[in-house]
Length: 107
Image (cartoon, rainbow, N blue to C red; front, side):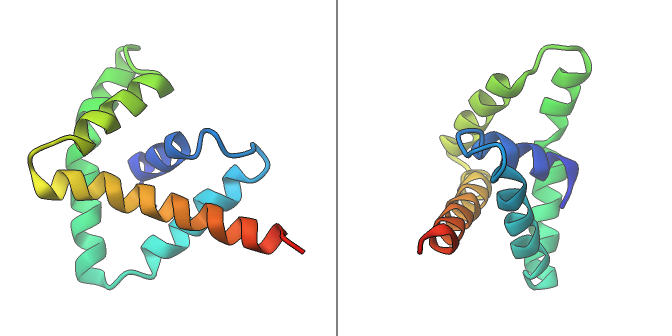
């Protein structure tokens, strides 16, 4: 998992219990690694491109976790389909991870 992807997943899972959050991140990491190479390459390229602005903002101290969530909201509202789908993909994987962990915890 690329660093920006990890930041996005952590931001999307910010309302998950702190003890469960590493498991959510690990689930998403495994899901991304299990993608076919041509799909994973596209997601990785988007992570690199879309992560440039937040990386610059963080470097000058202008971006915190709430700012990253705002950035993700802007990306999800984009008129460009692949940009919108990038955030939806990671959001969906976080949602799947939550459901899987809830199923495991249920008796």
